[in-house]
Length: 136
Image (cartoon, rainbow, N blue to C red; front, side, top):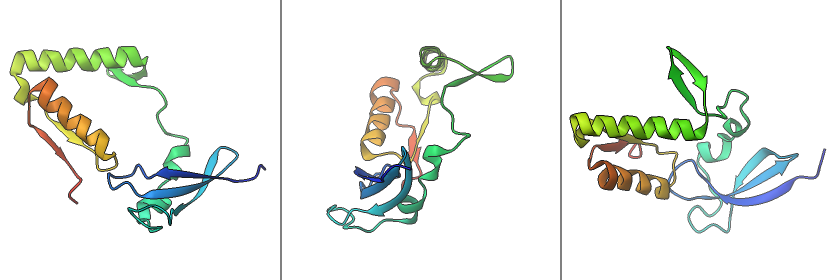
């Protein structure tokens, strides 16, 4: 086993931006603690920030996009997945109007990701139909 490395980072579980220190050994996160020098959390973490890192190394985590074809989810390329999304959003917007599309943002995303999400919905799709679980 290699020596552990300590990596300063920002928690990606919500938009607060808490500072974390990851203990990484053999390219795997083995422990997380709050960064006492971080102005947002001063070393404190919530239970998700401290313990919900095992999903990073989960064996059943998706690594490629999936598209349903003939009733089955099949692996595809990123290019095909993006084209599928763009074509279907364009079709729905054309057939039913922009208010037929809504988006649900994720509290586990950063503020920046949620900003881009709402900007996409309002500027590209033309809809204010966006919600999220950030308030819970």
